[in-house]
Picture 1 (cartoon, one colour):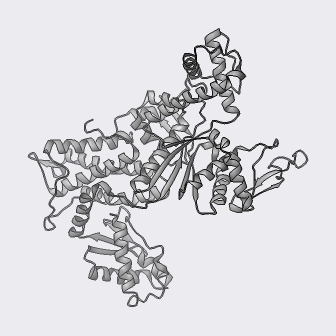
Picture 2 (cartoon, rainbow, N blue to C red; picture 1 turned 45 degrees about the horizontal axis):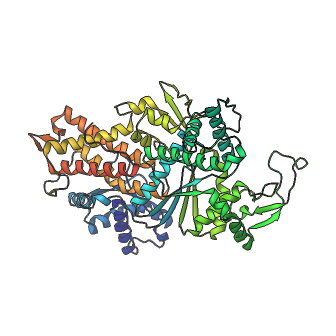
Picture 3 (spheres, rainbow, N blue to C red; picture 1 turned 90 degrees about the vertical axis):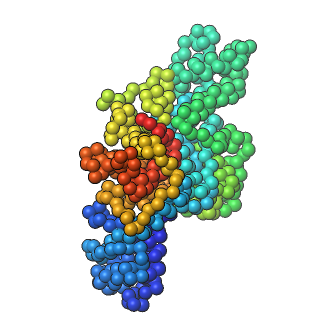
Length: 574
């Protein structure tokens, strides 16, 4: 149930029916006409711009047209008790008691699905995909939570979603990782000093992996790195992925598919993708121009396979081969995305780290070429997370080596706080994660404030011994809402619109923003009841009026739905 969609249909149907009497030659397919929330200073439930928009298109005074539309609404629609013209021609509308009751009852009846807009599409969301060379760091946490909550949001709307992790287990970084483990094993077994360089991984966690490998291979001497390389690669990757999966599980995240780059290479998926692009004349042999900042004289031109990504909106064409003829990282990624396209997903979403901003155009172009523009890839870049404690930057962990691990974060604050606060701003903006604020039990801690609203409502149900699922009788003759209840109900009506926007624009941060605003309205009402008898919910052990009970139940329904999407718990007591 979306109140804005319902009433825009009623109003536009009314305009179409009365087009002639309204002297409207051009309806412009009713494009741009919306029903939304009026500004706070107007005490109305809804606002519509139909008169303003159609007046301009038809060269009619918008205010005069809006007055005619207002008269039609009051005459033919029984939903509104009052309609006023505001500003240059906006229609502000106030619902009747009967309409409010009808909409409240719809939500109470359909509470499990309130806000859902069934779209029934097939999505693949690839997120985290951290190099399997150690535990997750804080930057991975943000992308992991963004991807997981986006998946929950899309599933809530009835879509099929596959959560995927691409294991980058092929190439020099894996050999360097195995070499690091080998040297730690030599350190443990033979007291040889571990001498680090920029290609190796210095973290103490490498020792833990080394100890596990020694335990599992008691007869292995590890005298020669090249002889032990195959074993070290396999087992080091296994233990590293166990670390990553453990961190993800602690954050409440589980992937459906783990896709190995090694499998991609061994199955020659890159060759297959290149051949497909060649057939369509999107890949050919040629020479790349010198990169910006490098002169033509110093640039060594090498003939290689080049993807014509400029045909699909990229800034420049892209090399598929290195100077030595081997595939580029981008070529491997093209092979991987061909596999995704062949798995018949309608939408692909890649959640990337802050250092991948410049990569999005080329891979988006590749998916367009591979699918003949039938599959849409959307790349969402998650910006950096800056941690603060006691007003100072939070220092890195010695165990991690050169980064702050997910485990460091989990040692400081719980999963609920991390999940909520990592979505406290849009993904394309940096986040300042302040441990002190996250641990506060106050309004300044959004996750606490939302959880506390639910706990307070639970305490009301316990006190009154009320089953929130019981039918509530609302009588239009006695129906009355005070100003606090009206504000809360109007905010409740926004929920489906928030879900739709967050889902369609891939902006899950809108959910915690909205929940915090709703919780703030509820706490404000609660506080007024402590100061003024008129605003108390309960009188002599009973709820004062059924309207109040209905509003309280609606708040609990929406908070529960929203926090479930976020993957954040809701304690009954705090």
